[in-house]
Image (cartoon, rainbow, N blue to C red; front, side, top):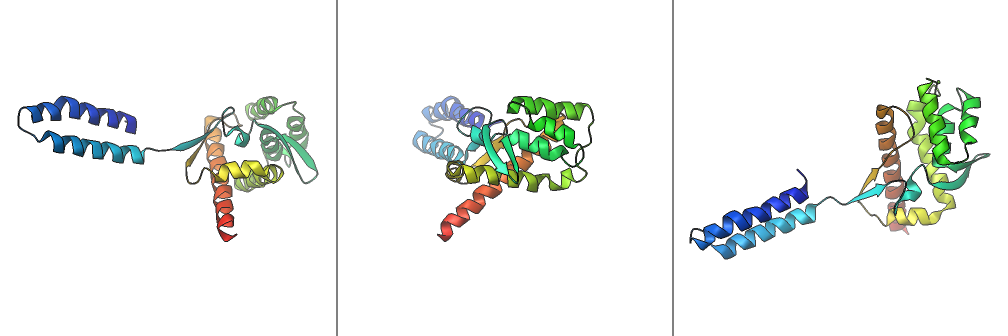
Length: 199
């Protein structure tokens, strides 16, 4: 049950149980109303506030599908989707990695990555161990070119980051990569906030 459901239940309980009891003289209506209002306010204050990162919306710049070129090393990546796909295969199947990189947009890069999963193409031997650090480097390179992205991220404070959809084919891989991206963005935000405090 969500907090909104609980709030609705509390208000219903007040209107249909507490107030009728008060009217029959079995409960102090003022005290009951005050208690319910106080409890409702506490629930509202605790209601979760989240930052949702999706292909569309105010935080789409952090989605892997967002079209924003950035350079890392000697390679220019049209989007984070291209970058992740390329890095996933570059050491095990450089031809397929280049095929992903040449995709005309992030959606096509996504489909090519998915086809690699479906064809059981071999990812880099150490991809699972290194992907979080690799993705961190990618986001830092992107933010370096677009400092306004970092400012937007810092302004979210401590709000929970939720990431919608990712790059690979299997549900397990998608969930895993989703959490990696959230951890990376949390780390970048925390680091930036700490840096601001030092200044």
